[in-house]
Length: 261
Length: 376
Image (cartoon, rainbow over all chains, first blue to last red; front, side, top):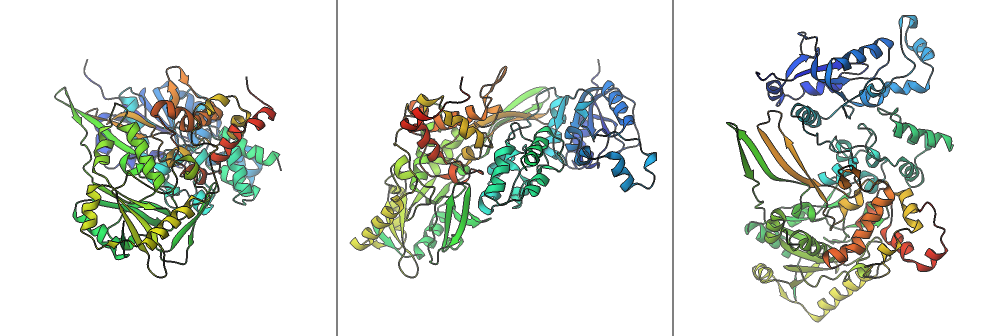
């Protein structure tokens, strides 16, 4: 049988498009990508689309509407491998900030005719709706990690995506710990590696874009920020409540800070 | 012993560069003293000191012109001898033939200027692990054989230092090519120079120097004595058999409550050598490579075997690190794996103090009195 290039589809749900744009950002590697795979459905790149089934589907965004909750099931049915890309798809994204609020009230505050909206109460990750084969973290995802994951699935090998802390990448790069040397709060110790310690290398604390690391110990980190770095409680809460606010580890870090108030 | 003026440093850097060495030395960057390549002694910090404590590091003005007036910072020399990422080999597929290409061994010749006594001991420990264990690491061995080591004797200790109890103290006696003691008189510093090897002697002879006076030697001894006055200590130089005997101590649960499991202590440790080896392939499947990179015994993956992770709790991972470093390292390599540099104390983001953990774990009276909770 003749060799057929594996087909790739990119699907968008509630998201900003930044993660799928990472695939187009692979400028130097793009030709190699197109040599190895056939892009079957990627509307940000081409209006030519194929119905599927697809060998690999990259799914960006979270589920926020009943229509999307249906659509993700159809995507799953048509995909041999389903990989979620980015914080929205893996934890619900920044839009999950609304999960703790009344959606009706928020909609009235934003839209002149909120009755046109048909939204779910919660912004939820893809894995809350269908089985997911791999979750790639980041807000946005890292280009190198995306290529690694696509290569791994196309060649049927295990992707090399570490789940340890940002600190491992930070120290490997030779950067100076901003928390120890300057007293700047940094989420690096509880955040999964992948960005190459981008912010700490620029003397900024980590914002936690890649979500909780494999064993996030938020309790002792929050305590250190409060006691040694003199951070007010509401600022610590805000640090956890960003792109991965609905990830179980960061959500429970917020809960324990608010419970002990 | 010889004595030299501050101009000696510039001549030393120039002389080593002429001999083909890349000179790596302490430089001030991003609010810390780090190790980086220098082209001139002008790049050395001047009048910069540090204040260190658990989870805390700050640079301070000393008000003098010392070039080495600080203790060890976040970098270690392993960053150069055992880099964070090394390609071990690559393979290419052409005409359905796999071709394996061994990695090119590094040809850099480093001259390290400003190696402290604890760091010399750390390099000697890594030599034993990476060269002397019967499975010599070719990359490390090549870099190590070429390296020229210029020690600087410490004239002060940070509050995190404990080399006096962990090792042989702050004065380097061997393992260097040249050793300098910075003598801080009024004005520019002078350097007492000791020679450790023939190679060091050859370099020294090409540089301006004079015989050291008894007063200069006395000043160097006084500097080392000052550096030996340290706030922290280990209960004994050898803890062989001690930590392994308190495996179920309640303190392991206590430290696990504070530990982030982030791995910083292992990454700043000058003797930690744990790494992972990963294969990766290009999308075209035409090229693959095997890469070794730094890992940490605090990562899940590090103890992952078929069926799961061996060490599944922070408690078991911290206990593994500390017990290996101070106790079972003796069984494996014939000595402790700790040189007392104190980096793990200063660079722990939440200030866990190894010496304090060990003090409690080894305190027999307290152990008897302490309630044991959560142990099976």
